Image (tube, rainbow, N blue to C red; front, side, top):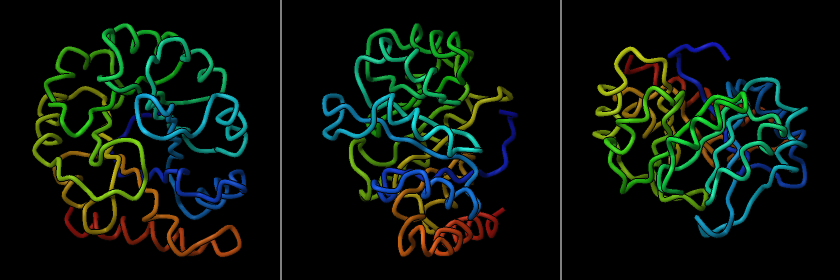
Length: 228
């Protein structure tokens, strides 16, 4: 992964056809996805259950861009090596998931992955103030984690604050939740460069009709470019 601040769209495969993940991943990449976002939920830290390391490992051969794995689980540390083995390029843990996030980020980097830290809507930017030199990505949740398709929660002020705190460090700001052509421009103006979108990308399309995926992603890009 080479760091750059250009806008990246990371479709969340939580909104894909669960019976056809390989083809879905290939379709979104062919239609212009920059990253592939994988939401891992444990039914404990968040009220839903999705993928484990074996599923993520099965996705890996189909991902030719960046596999961005977002762990909504607690604890995190016992599973870091498993997700490294599964092929995650970026592994993100929630600052709220355990008492030793500093150690967790060290372990993620030590396993050869980029280290991400996520902030729930109720968690302030200052929670990562002492983690910036261990962090490659900050994921700002603009919905409460656990389900796709939720209503967007405006986190503009938090993103602006993070952008100030980051300074010239090579840290991505990722937005996860409710991203579409209406909400994405404000987040980019505030300082975000990675936009996770689930239903807004997959809506109206399928493996047999992937053109809708491309149209949906272009609509987000066009909306963002219009304000730059």
